[in-house]
Length: 316
Image: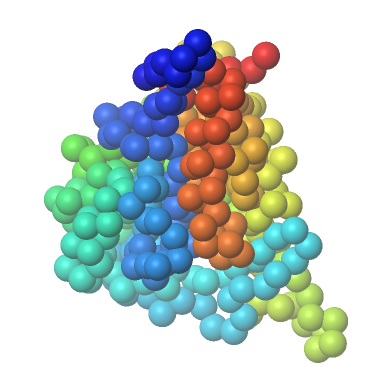
C-alpha cells in the first residue's frame, strides 16, 4: 500500500505469503521441537503476530523420550537428543489443538513415526482434525530398515510421503528434509513426485559430543542433532542449491528455509536465496522475542528497499 506524506511516498509492505493454499500473515514460523504447543511461551512474546507454529514432533502413540542428557550447548550451536517425547496424536488433538487454534497463527502438525504404517495412521487422524498443514519429519529412524532415517534414501522417503499423502489427501503436505542425506535433491524430487506440496530444509545435522571428564559420549544414544547459528551458512547453501536443482528439473514447490536463523538479516538471506518462508528454532530458546524482532526487521528492510511484497524478493 502506498501512503502520501507530503512529497514523500513510502510503502507499507505486505508480509503475507500463501503456501500450498494456506495464507500466513508473515513468513516467520516457529520451528518444530522449539516452541512446544505455543502456550509454553505465553507472556514471553507476541504469539499472535507469528506466521505459523510447527508443533513438537507427534507420533501415533505417546513417547517418553530419551534418557540421560537431552540438551548440550556447543560453540555457536545446540545439540539435542529429545527422542520425540510427546503425548501421542489423539491426546494432542483432544487437549492441545483447541488452545493452539485460538492463538492465531497457522497450525502445522509435525508428524513422525517408526514405520510407514505408523506414519499413515497418524496422518489419517491429523487429516481429519482442524490443523492447517502437516509437516512430515523424515529424519526419524525407520525401525524396519535397521534404524536408517527415512530421509536418507529417495525411495524410502518417497514411500512414506506417498503413504501420508494418501492418508490425508486434503491437507497440505510439507516434507522436512534431512541435511544428512547423501543427495538431498534426489530425496526432494522423490517427495515431490509422491505428493509433497512444500519442502522445508534443513533439519538438524548428525553430531556428537564427548564428556572428557568421564571419558564417554555426552548423549546416551551417542549421536544427537546439531542446530543453531553454526549451521546457518550450510543450511543457506542447501536451500540455494535445492532451488536451482528443482528449477533445472522444472519442479516448482515452495521451500521453507531453516537452520540457525537468529536475526532478521539471517531470515532475509534465506528469502533472497529462494525460500518462501522461514522457521526459527534455537534462537527462541536464547531470546524468546527473537521471532517478533525478525518480523519487524523484515518489514523495515522491505520498507527501506521499496519492496512491497515478499514475492518481489530477489538478488541484485
